[in-house]
Amino acid sequence: MGRVLPLDDSAYGRSSWAQGVCASVRVVRIREKREPRGLLAGVLRLRAAMQACFDRCDPDVAAVLGGCLCGDRERLDERGLGDVFAACGVAHMMAVSGAHLAVIGSVVAAVLEKTAMGPQVRLGTQSLILGCYVLVCGAPVSALRAWAMTTASGVGSVVGRRTHATSSASVVALSMVLSTPTVAARLGFCLSVVSVVGLSLLCPHAAYLLRTLVPAPLLSRRLDYATRRQILGVYDAAVGSWAATIVCQLVTLPFVASAFGRLSLLAPLANMVAMPLVQAVMALGMAAACLGATPIAIPVLSVCSVPCHLLLRWLRLLAGVPLCTVRVSSDSAVVSFASLAIATAWLLWWPRISRRQMLQVMTALLVAYALWFARARYLAPARLVVLDVGQGDAILIQDGAHALLVDTGPDASVAAALQRQHVVHLDAVLLTHLHDDHYGGIDDLVGVVGCDAVLVARGVREAMADDLRQACHDLCTREVVELSYGDVVHVGGYVLKMVWPHDVVDGDENAESIELLLERDGGEGRFSALLTGDAERDETRACVACGDVGDIDVLKVGHHGSEVSLDDATARVLSPEVSIASAGEGNSYGHPTKECREVLAQVDSHFYCTIDVGDVEVRPCPKGLLVRTERVASAA
Image 1: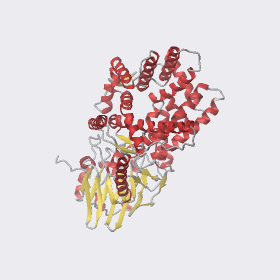
Image 2: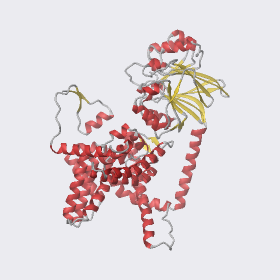
Image 3: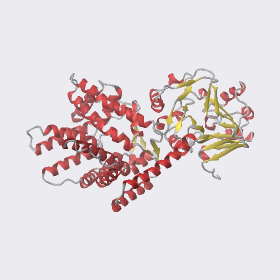
């Protein structure tokens, strides 16, 4: 039994409606269970047998094999690998598509050529094997498109017709849309078709650019002909792989920007190394799956672990590079127009470019990037910024080469906020407590900024869920550090002292949220602030009663400006010149509340909320405080 719920008017709801989904069903009670029968039962058993074979090796290797060969992303996400692949722009390698069918199809074709079968029988057998494999992987539309194109190409070869990728992709895509119109709204289908068409049209041009920039090596005549051919073959393969990656990234940018809002700048470099490793993993993994439960499968899996671990080490290395991933505009119309304009201009113009011109352009771009990076990484002004991350908290404290992020907001909006503030490295991320509106965005920082450590209150580390612990490891590759009452953290000229909680906590309650007293007494002037997380009036009152906190300049209002965030007596003691609340537009809690605003108004504190003005930046200066906001609050 279930309860039917209509789709809401969100991006997900509209996308689901376009794919033919008219509602969602919430299961209320299960009255009967039935095992699958027929073809579905056989497919599920085969899929389970493959995964059971992969489970005989390292969990990370098993997760990668399951993603490569079965299209199973669940284990990748459980192991925290999905974010690493996405940050490096190689997530497509973990979704069964044309590239996977090309590898498996070439292996099947090589085996069938050793048999006495005729061309027609070989084609039919290869198509049947690949079709069964697509079913085992759950029949994703990108794999169905690739299977149909492979079959059509094979039929054309048998009957003596010349194959043409663009025509084949267009015919197959049109046939699929006519048979199932809702397939046109599926992201995998769009990416698959656009990639094939883009490769057939633009890949020769991209390869021309790369060959101009990196000419083929000059080989000694002392080398024999076969050796020279092998070296040049490796060069051609590398150029082709890199050109294909660049083209796919360009033509799929509108869809990626609209769906995910981010782009990997290191995708070409990541793919160049990852592609041969993935191909090796696929070939060895498929061999192990065919051997099944036999003892021979174990040494095959052991060999397979080598390229798999090399792949993961390479991707984790790149994911730790600042600006590996950048946030891009989600306005698909603008991005689509720009991409189409660039591709059309290039096809029509096709300029002749010299290596010298390319080197000059690249040098200028690298110098500009180096200057920007040096300023962002080492010359940042001393400031405190309450970031606009919706209904959540994220506070940046920065001074020169040092930066600390207090909480990471509820989702990926924190990554966009840090890039908006030109932050490329964090000394640490401090999580005040374990509510998802304060830590939900931590996994989205992987590949966006470098980070040295994650800090929590004493006792919280053991209470962390496995997925959060894995996200922390992916971000900084170090064990989470615990802070106790009275501990001090230095961020450039800033000194942050933990003034709450006093005891060991598990971080599940607002009352267990870390409160930090921030102070600075440098050349720019004295500056003090209290960062309260989700702590409320009882906890802040206790900090004041202990003498840990007195008159301050800036108050980050507790619990998003709730009714119980602050009382009159505590507000008079703190007497903040500036008070800042972080809350999301249209939140159901009414944050920040009228009661909170009135308490702060009684002590003549200037109040700002991210709902009204976006990011709020406070800089110390000799004559007081300089407050900057992302936008001006509306008159309403």
